[in-house]
Each structure stands twice: as C-alpha cells, then as structure tokens.
Length: 67
Length: 497
Image (cartoon, rainbow over all chains, first blue to last red; front, side, top):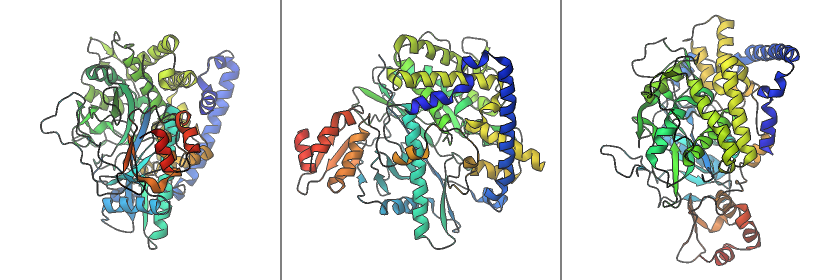
C-alpha cells in the first residue's frame, strides 16, 4: 500500500506530463508561486519557533562521544 | 541470485539537558530511556553474548584499531516493534527492527522519532520545572563532534568483501546528492572559515579512510565490521556508517532504496564491467558535499572526469536494466523496486534541471531553501547564529520547536501508520517473532538479541531460541503458532527447542 502511494506521489517526473508543454509550464509557474507563498508563510512564523537566544543556543549545543 | 536486502536504520540522537549546565550526556541519555521504559510494562533486557563489534570483515584484526566497546551497564531495551532502544556511548540510540523493504525501513525509522518524542514527554513528567531533555535527529554539533546514523543490509557471504568495497565506494561518494541532510559551514580540520557556506552532507567532513573498522576515529567510507547477527556461514551484514540522519521520509527512502538496489546489483555481478571508480574517494566525498552547484567533476581511475550526477546516472541506468532482467525480488518486490528506480531517476533529473524543486522532498534542499529565504529577508551573513539555529532546529523533533515540521515536506506514511509501527513489528522478518513474543509473553522473556530470544519459564535452565536467519520467524511462519500457544511453555514445546 505504501509503495503505491509513493509512486503516485512521484508524479513530477512522469513522462506523460511532458506531452503538453504549455499546460505543464503554466502549472509549474502556478506551483512555483504557491511554493513561494508557503515559504513566506513559514518565514513569517519562524522566529517564534527559534530558540530565544540563537547565539547562546548554538554555542551551548555540544555533543561528545558517540558511535 | 541476490538475496533479499533485509535492512534497518540505527540512529544516535543528539541530546541536551535544558536547565542543567554541564549535565553528563550518558546519565541524561539513561534518564531519557528509563523514563520511557518505566511507562511501558514488560521491560526486557538485551543479551550481549553474541556481540562482537571488533570482528573485521576482511578476516583479520587490525593493529592499533579500537573496537567499539559494548557497555553492558547501560540502559538497553527491546520494543514490541522489534527495535532496540539503548544508550550508545553518550547518546540515546534507536535501532529499527529488520525490515524487508526500504519503505518499511522508512516507516520504522519514523517510528523511532515517536519513541524519542514519547521519551522526552515521559522525562518532562519526572523532571523539575525549568529542566527538559531535548533530542535532535542530526549528526553534528557544528564543533567537530559527530555521531552516526548507520544502515545495515543483509548480504550473501559468498560475495568477496573487496568487490563490495570497490563497487559501492563511488556510489557512497555521490549518493549524498539526494541523501544528504545539509549543513551550514564545514567542520573539516583547517578548512578556511567562510569557504564552505553550506554543504550537502552532515557527515562528509568526518571521513578519513576508504575502508576500515573504526566508527569514531579515522572513519572509513566502507566499514568492515563483521558482525552478521545471523548465520555467519551464509550471511554478511554490511554496516554503512557514512549516511546522514534524515528527517524527510523521501530522503530516507531514496538513501536505503538505492543502496539496497546497488548492493543487489553487486551481488549479482551486474556492476563487474562498469567503469565507476574515482580517484581519492575520501577527498571526493568532501568535494561533492561542499559543491552545492553539483558541477565540479571527479577524476576517474580509468582517466578523464565525470560529474557526481553523471556517476549517479551510471548506477541508476544500470538499476533500470537490472530491474528488467532480474526483477525486484531482492529489494522488496517488483513494485517497490520500480518505485525506487523511478524516484531515483526523477530525483536525478530534477537535480540537473531545477534542484530547488526538490525542496518538498530532500532534506538538504528544503533546509537550504529556508536558510536562503531567511538570510535574504534579514540581510544577514552565512555565519549569523540565527541561521545556525535554524540548521540545528531543523532536526529538533519536538513538534513545537521543529523547523522541519513547519515545512510542507511530502510524506510516504501518514501519522497513523507511523504510530502503529511503534508497537507492531514488521511482518516479513524475524523481527515479527521477537516483537510478538515480547508482546505476548513479556514475563517469560529473560533477554533478547538480534539473533536469539531467551525464555525464562520459571525453572532452570533458561531456554534460548536461536533466530539465525533474518527471513525466518515472519508472520507467515509463526503467526498460527503464536496465536495457538496459550503460554510460552506451549510455544517452546511446539518449536521443539
């Protein structure tokens, strides 16, 4: 079941989509705008997600030992 | 004919104790796992008898090499999904159960994140206000300390190890094009500050050898640990240590799927005549990681050059032919194999034409796109700590602090499927027998290991059930037996052990 879902979702590179280039590029441009809008929305909120003091947080993140 | 590429992913998580400066990471990791285990019933210990991580696949002991230590005094547990959850050195580590397909490996890797998330919640309930244990699914602290995300693949013992090394190395050097998780800057010693703004891989900076036994010093591209956790006369477990921990399901699927495919081809002699070797693979590994434009060519051993993408195309096009002539049985069936190859090809095409279009699928692209967006919006330089914080928090698995969760990354499995995999083992490997016995007879399991279960029936001696073949003990083999056995005694009697 999972494999089928994955195949379906791999659509961007499927050959059929190349047969109608106009439609394809139109759709792509629209898709591009949507993606940009989504990224902008994430950028609007990201400071709330980030740790309060980035410099201190990054400096204090130390990992010793492993594997 | 290649044997099924039974596979699994083991992840060491980065760990922080908020509110306690200089907390001991070993104690913190133990506390985290204990908090989780104490909320579960039926804790079962791990059995170390067959552990021999110092054995070398090349058939000799290396002078001066330091085999990893096995720490028997630390927390160690087995989950009903067949996974092992324990403290490895100074990190909490989740080793997925043995999976029959790469997509299943994705599912159980994601289930591991749920286990860690529940552990953090359990620890929070025990800790005083102001203290919190936080884990990160990444591979570096940006200060030169690295910890691993290792993969394991079942291989036929008859395939000469040197052949595996020769043929898989160029693949490992270049698979980071889609399997990398991305990182700001470089931790390679003496690398000039500012020369590498961003690179494809978290791990490439830390590799120094082409082949060897180490995992913490002088890390090799191909690790030679010869510890099959199975019948050593028939099987080998290829222990792959150079990968990044991926947040994106799609990145993990491509990483494990393409690797399983390449290993199946090696086993079937399908790469014997291929001209794939590159000069100085260790240096090439770094060069590929540092070159986000993916255009710097690699030097071929046979002369001339090849771009990393073209080298990947060599493997992918062979895989397509392999699928036609040999089928997909070795990598989880025809449908799974077709999915691996078609996704591999479409990813390479997109990397060639429009890499940023993969921001909804590949970790290094998703992270880079966000970093560039943030940098441009705030007009800051690459060394701004806010960008480094985004880099770290991309891998924070707390929903409220995870940068990854804010991005619309495609998934293969939904939340419900991932939640189910936290308790339900894979059906197609011996993990099924391990997990179901733990679920059904927790009070009778004295210890568990990858290749055996030890039962305690309340009298001497303890009884060991060997599981030397990863493909036996599946739901198909043992489901009837398990459901008809009312007690562990009945089960063992029926098994005749």
